[in-house]
Length: 275
Image 1: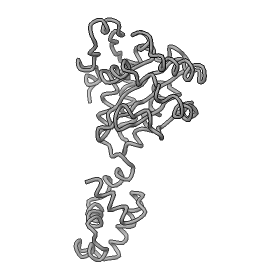
Image 2 (image 1 turned 90 degrees about the vertical axis):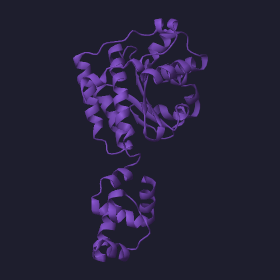
Image 3 (image 1 turned 30 degrees about the horizontal axis):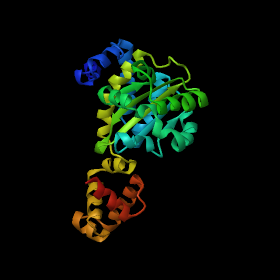
């Protein structure tokens, strides 16, 4: 990966009407320090063995590299149901905010408004400051910002980053802070460059830790898994692979331990789901 891959492509710029484009934030050039910070985040996340690990590592990277204390990572089958994720990864006060958010405010999230969705799809990032610069927020989204983010939790700045996940799923990474100017134009430009590269990493990951463990098995272990998935007994596997039956038992035991599966049936289902 080279630094040139981190700059925004023409396709990542906003595709609004000329009047709307004129009111959008100007494109911010990345500095050397921004590239270095972006590469640090990519390095933190690039070794993730599975999507659950990636979610946790990205939240930690944003905390460590950008100083963001309050971060959430929501996932949905489509953009519209992301906000209904019942088990997001949370950092800082987002864990405390979650119950009230899920009960009352998720449908009014400011990053679910049409203007935010356009920004997220076109550039990968949307921020509260940019949305306000475009005009008045819808009444429901304004209530979410004023009463939930600001009055209840003291969050004066907010931004979201959209990522593409395996199987066409989508993620939304929320970033919040008590300082109104916490996310500078430079920060937002760096996050926009990162969103495309992080999506490329995430799309290739196994969706669960057991699937990641399955991918890390040795060639012989994968052969055993395939025969278990085909319904063969230990004796039949031993005959097929020219192994002692005790050796097959040890293989199966180690594979179950490595993948976290509780039974041969669970292992078989995991292998079949992986294709």
